[in-house]
Length: 244
Image (cartoon, rainbow, N blue to C red; front, side):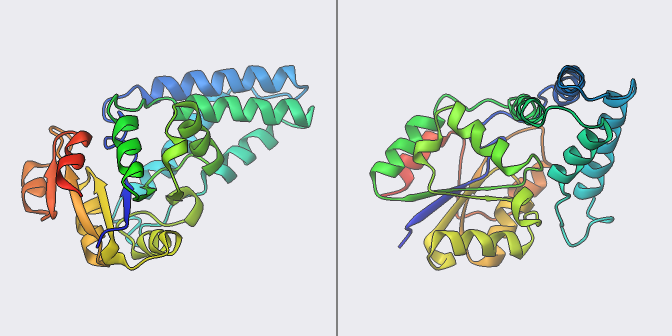
């Protein structure tokens, strides 16, 4: 019997594909440089360029299965700490506030689908434990603040985020962490996600039941057709008719 439902984040609970990531990063790091200077630090003139380049290198390496066959997540929090440290000392309270603003702006590149809260609320009311099982590099506290800002946090029992455990789906380590936090057998967990490998094949390999939220023009149709979920949906609200 299913007791727990876990959700991928981007393109499952919220928009993700084709969102303005680079423009948002440029704006966020530009504001961070200004805030660091106001806090007494001395960011270099090329602060934004260096931040964008460093983030791009780590991101592309992490998602390249040839360069990262073990699916290890990079340490984005450490990267941000290093970038800020290079700007030199300043008022620590103001610097932390500047960092939080930067991270919040980066996570707000995505926005929840309108049906996310009603669906989560209805599933929670039926007695299911709800978890987030997501490949996301942004620091964990910033991710949790996103769920608070957008009203989803009251329905979430636990978060299994690649940024915190150091492994990315389809690594079994990521699913192991989820099952540990859920406190039940893998077969009692339904994972809902849009990625044919990270969400469906990875979840099945660890013994989860899986649901594919079908998308178009993100992944190859053949991969979507052959990944073999227990069932698929087009909209989150369909879960309410598929589950007791």
